[in-house]
Structure formats: structure tokens, C-alpha cells
Image 1 (cartoon, rainbow, N blue to C red):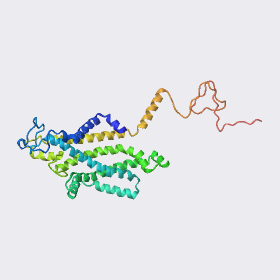
Image 2 (cartoon, helix red, strand yellow; image 1 turned 120 degrees about the horizontal axis):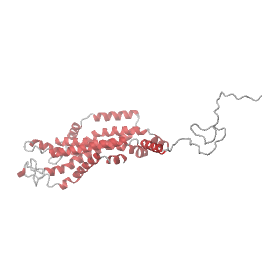
Image 3 (cartoon, rainbow, N blue to C red; image 1 turned 180 degrees about the horizontal axis):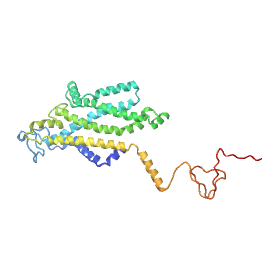
Image 4 (cartoon, rainbow, N blue to C red; image 1 turned 90 degrees about the vertical axis):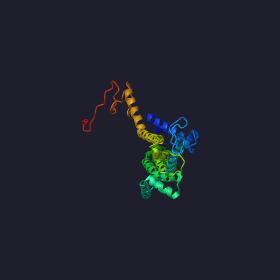
Length: 338
């Protein structure tokens, strides 16, 4: 929560959140607020330009471009969210638990994760769709499996750094269970890192979804998607050179806002890593400026006599009017009476 509140004070983060909130509203209600049926064809107005009836014109089948853009936002964004949700489920929980793996189990888990990270997103999704069927859920499941190693490695690295912290060891000595420590101590510290990874993964997932739908994979036509609209518009650039601009702008704005938000979250997490030390230094400077000193030995109260023959503590001033005790060295010789 501290990282999120610190990020909200950054103007760039507020602008990114405003863009993402608008895209989310379009994803949820875009099909309802569309001015026309996104699938309705009007052969009398094929490749029409912007007008009062069609604000962004019509495509090669006479369908309203604005309506298809609004309706396609839901499929494109929700598909990316589905892929990232699968990746987080498969990566975050095993990443937290892997902090307690033995050396052999950790080595096997890391090698399996490395092998998955070497696979290209698009080719693996095409292979999965070929095996499971051409559907959006199948493609997003494959994409989520490929994004899971990212969550696993990031969560594991953060959990390993916190697993040997002093407060974690103190909780273990007091008899706290491992699940309680993971929920209360480690998970709250790992959450900002997971949030940064989620924002980056959403941007990657959205670009991959657009690439797949551009190739006609994962969605059945004539369902509108951002990538599908780009693919259909490229065949008619001679008649409508501006046609790919609206879906391309939406893709760039959404991906850019996600990356900006991830960067601000990462910066806020790093700058807030040691707030206690900063507060301690500021408090020490305030005490020094106000003349208040702190230390293990307090100065003597003026007017209070010292005990005769008792040396003063080092660095402690003696009371006014009291003679200081003479220094006596070990080699001083005291003569015996005759």
C-alpha cells in the first residue's frame, strides 16, 4: 500500500492510471455503448470515410469502425488479463514455496523454468492452438504457461531475500508456522514486486494477443479484435491509408500506460526500501539542531557536588567548584611510613 500511495503522487502514474481506467471501461461496456452493431454489414457504404453516421468510417464490408473498435476492446484486454491471471497462478505460489526447497528440488525447478523461458510466445501459442483447437481460451492458456516462469523467478528471488530476515527468524523461534510467516511477513514484502511484474506482463500479453489475432489465431471471425482490425485494414491502404491508425493508437496507449505504471511502481518500491533509516537520520539532525544530545552518559546537574576522590566519567563535566580528582597512574609510587 505504501508503494501504491507513493506512486499515486507521481503525475505520470496518474496519467497512466487514467488511460488504463478508460480502457477498462471500454473493455467492460464498449459493446453496450457502441453506436451500431459491430457485425452489421452495409454494402452501400463500403470503405466509407468519417461522417455523422459513422464517426470513424466503415471497413471493407461496410461495418462501422468505431463500433468494432469499442466491441473489440473487451476481447483484446480481457484475453490479456486471462493470460496474466494464469501466469500469476502458476508462478507466484510455486515461487513463494520454492524458497524452502532443497538444493536438488530448486535446481530442477529452475531448469524447468529456464526451458520454458526459451520458447517463443507466438510459436508456442500457435502449436497449442493447433493441438487444442482454434479458440481464445486455448491460446491464452498457452500464453499464461509461457509467462509463468517470469512470475516464478521474480517471486522466488524476492522470497529468498526475505526468508533469512531477522524478523522471520524471530517468528520461527516464537513458534509461528511457515504458512503464517508466508502470509503475514513475506507476502506483503513480495507484493510490490509482483505488482510491477504484473504490469509488465499485461503489456507483453496485450502485444502477444494482438499479434495472434492479427494472424487470425485464437479468435473466430467476424469477432472484432484490435489485431484483427489491423490485419483487415492493411489490405485496403490504397483506399483508406488512415484505417489502421485507431486500433494501433489504442494498442500503443494501453501498452505504454502499463509500462509507465510498472516503471513508477518499481521506482517507488526502490525509494521506499529503507524509510526507517531515512527517518532516523532526519530525527538525529533535528535533535542536533535543537541542542538535544543523546548518549549513554548524562551530564552532571550543575550545583550537585561530586563524591570526593571519585573520578568523573570520561567526557562528563564536573560540577562547578568541585576539584577534579587527581589522575593516578599505575607506576605511581606511594611511600610507606617509616
